[in-house]
Length: 298
Image (cartoon, rainbow, N blue to C red):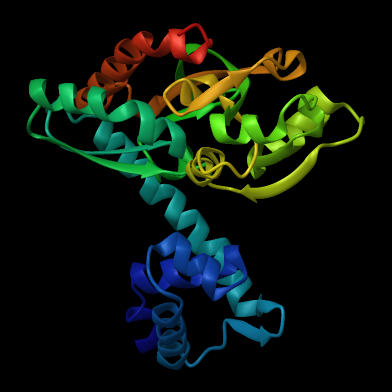
């Protein structure tokens, strides 16, 4: 009885995160803390409840029967808490408070700041927490309030506005282009974002000889910097490539025909939350000025 009465939501959140991620590193990332902190906390929780929730195995943490029970029961509690939070947010009519926004690193770095600054001029009491990431945060789990995503298939449970289509382009700096001389583009060395590799292989190279990839990263800013340093040519959304004055776009028909879409998304439960709705509309309108870059027309 004492153990059950000592249960609190913070304990359950930690156990849930490890259940879902199967590792302390993954749980730490989700919880926004360190590996060592999660390690100390789970040991303390198991001692507090006199219950082992996980078997420690070389490949990670495996749930015991008690861990599976927490995953099932606490997961349902979490869903109810998140639903309550969204309903309460939906009744919030004030243009003040926090907004959690996520966008790809490139969009965050090259596009968003002027539009966020102009939003603050109109609504100084709002605070914005920006998460630049290629990770798809779960809007249904209240990880974010607004999301800008490059996708052809926006999720069904969201209010979605299509900002524009965007095209891809092949870019390189002058120094690299001078070094390669008259080589054909498929003979170039490439620096590529890992997120585009599969799509490029499927839609552009289509089983043909894949060019030599000299450098790759899951961070598009690192890839753009590698191209600017002369390591090779790169494939970037024109929305980003056209913003880099030291990169030149190179004619590459297969790549130029590869395109996708940019959407801004809000969970449907937040449709009456004015501050979130106001930022969504402001970013949507502001980013219309970026269409010429997105379509490679600058």
